[in-house]
Amino acid sequence: MKINVEELLPKMTDFLKSEAKTDTVIGKQFQLGEFNCVPVIRLGMGFGSGGGEGNAPQQGHGEGMGLGGGIGIEPIGFLVSRGAEISFISTRAKGGLSSAFEKAPELLDKFLEQQKMKKEEAVEV
Image (cartoon, rainbow, N blue to C red; front, side, top):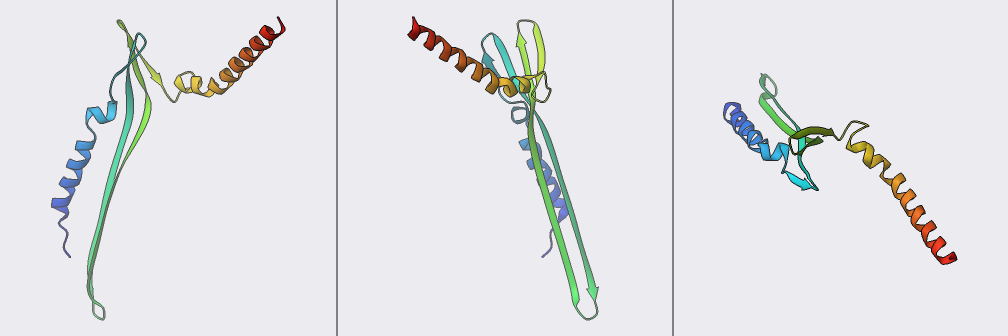
């Protein structure tokens, strides 16, 4: 079985290029109150190949080949704009969006506790 790497490699790179379009990498803009938000995503891709053939007096002729490729996509943040102001909010930084998500359970507990206390006060009055 003969595989022509010179033909296969351009097909593989064309496929990866078509998957790495701006729409795929950046994402679609959305509105959050008065803010315009655009997700930003890191895209990584790689591929490799190897092959060989040989002749051995007792075993005869042999050949083999392998190809592989992969794509990794990771959200890294948001471009946020309001009027003329533009900023980047990272999903990785402790002070960014990840910080808010980390504190969400704690804030929710405090909110629920306050609601419970308000109900108890209303029943006592």
